Image (cartoon, rainbow, N blue to C red):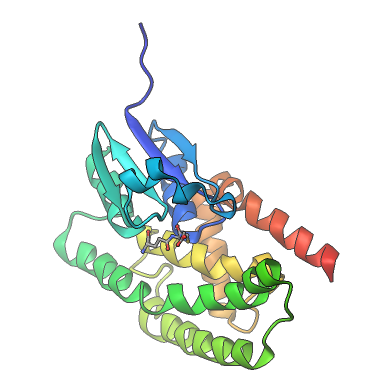
Length: 228
Ligand SMILES: N[C@@H](CCC(=O)N[C@@H](CS)C(=O)NCC(=O)O)C(=O)O
């Protein structure tokens, strides 16, 4: 009897780190079962899910009983465990170190700053019915702009992708975060042509996997527009 893939991945595609994992699985054709955990319905708060990840967050990977949380670790595990093209997470030590350098920086810069804009413009108003807090939004946008400047001057410097001349898992983590504010109709790269060109290169490199991962976010943007 044929058995399905033993790899299970728990995601909600409205979550930025989940989309990064989804794009790699899709692009690299890694056989897996996708399990949707709808955060808006509190499906991450069930006892069953909490047993899998006591932090009650997605994404989570289960590979034949081996449970792994944290998108960064999951992306690197997938790239190492499966026969994916080397560029995703290069074996050459210095190239790999460049990816690790960005992903370490990402979690206290790109991620919190881009996520905050989405939280203030979309999530809080949707959950509480309140107006957008303009003062907090202005501060969040200013912090995000500092991060975008650093992305351009430090990571993109004369290179096509964040860590060199080819796409890596670092680009997936970054692009999915920077797409998130689009859910509220805001393109945070509007005044950053260098980053816009990078985003286009990432889109071209991953092809249709990009739109498949972002379809739900685009639906949120349409609903948001209709409410305005
Ligand atoms: N550092 C974690 C962050 C995971 C995370 O914050 N996931 C969010 C969605 S973007 C979540 O599951 N939130 C549910 C909750 O906190 O209740 C990673 O990169 O995987």
